[in-house]
Image 1: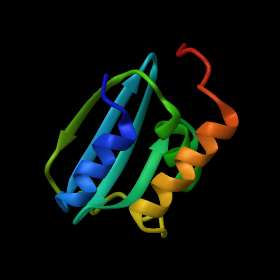
Image 2 (image 1 turned 180 degrees about the vertical axis):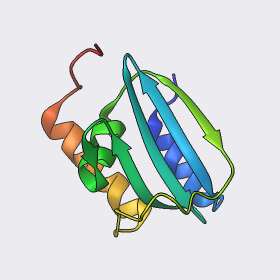
Image 3 (image 1 turned 135 degrees about the horizontal axis):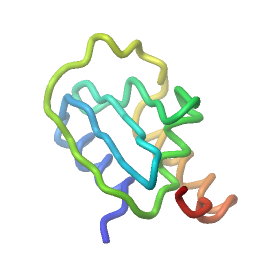
Length: 102
């Protein structure tokens, strides 16, 4: 099993640009990266850091990464990716695993 934060770390360290999509049940989360930095996140009605942290808690799902720019996705993440990942890990420790997918 691959942890989503490990995938994000790899994309960050290799300075990838593209869209990471993660499907879990009926939910689809998206994290857009530019030169390895997460710039946009959304899942359902959640956007920005709230969406990033929700997606980062998922322990299962199917992911894909498409290497292309997405200028239509307005930036809604303003911390660097490492800071977002550290906060996501802290929140996951506090909140435990997410509820089962729908």
